[in-house]
Picture 1 (cartoon, each protein chain N blue to C red):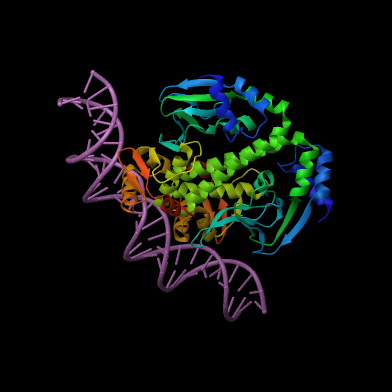
Picture 2: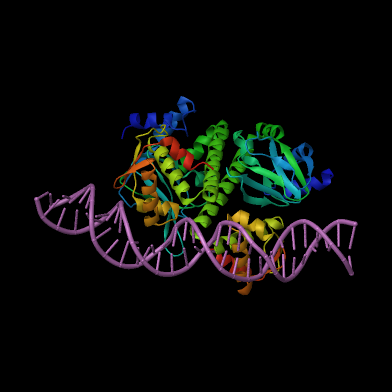
Length: 230
Length: 230
DNA sequence: CTTGAATTGTCGTATTAGCGACAGTTTGTA
DNA sequence: TACAAACTGTCGCTAATACGACAATTCAAG
């Protein structure tokens, strides 16, 4: 992948789009591309945070493993998504595992380069602080969802989240399609495959989505949105 | 309340304890004391964030109200706890309601004063960034708890959290007592009073805690810790 | 000490959802 | 096309828990 591919991605991402051109250039040259096969580890819980990642292609699964060995999926990172920033800012170990869910290309900005950027341009702090706040707010609304929605409501919320993440934060339209197994949805909802199956069929019967083997299409975006309103 | 009371609280809080003495002084003079009666609003969801708060005495309830009008309690802020920082850093509206649960004394640092502090001392950014990261990590572990623990496990986790918050992050010992109604615990767990009642009695039968009318005493801290291990 | 309000203890019932089992369907690969 | 692997659809049983009802207990204010 060439610098000319990296440049537009950095300069259009919410993480860096508001930054001056010379800083973008500095990042473009510092960024490194990593290729991973399905199942490979990006990082593991308790690892030292060595950098910030952006998904260029493929999917990365962020998860935690319980004492009993069950994997709880936090979410998937998709093309255009950034992750791994917390350890960057507080220097503490990773709080979860990150695995390649499919073959992946990741852009990596090392902690060293990122810190150098901040030392050189301390005026960037407020910007990154706002990004951190955004993460906190997302996490809080996740907790609100968890507490006040039925499983069906949460399922709708997750579908929307994944659909939104899909195309670089592009708006969702009726017809947007996303690929995910019912098993994976269940792991993300801390539910069971069978229950997710039943709920998806209910949603299909309500003409909200259409499901077909690991692929679901949003039929009625507004209704979906309503079903996960808090 | 005199400056001499405010000073040690600021200089010992995790938010400000690592800061130079002159900055502490600047904050001490800028801080204002607010008194609230039970039930009074500190701020409301969607309000503009006008400041950062520290509980001096009493308890503040952070909560959200669902569409159906049910109040979901996030947590209680107790003496020594700081809250309200997110809106301060990103300028966006409050994400939840804050009410006085009991008569309260709150120390308030206005957004204006806090921003002035940051403008004057930009080297403080990394410090506050780390504090934000800490909040994210707490929130993430809350989500982990939600996903992997039984209701009983979550109950143990909440009890520990409240007990820890109790005495300015003092270590918990067997014998630590905290006051909270079963109804409140249920609202925080998104469960029912009756179920919480049953679980508390189970914990009492296991000699983990002792319960008596809105007051519970930790008998076996280690066992409690084990019960909410992820 | 008395009394009313708040809180807790305990039923029974209805609902939700987890989970094993197994058959049916689709997809990718040769 | 053929076949295996992965995924989905469905049933039935069981466990967890929400919730209404009501009695019992405790607390706090006179």
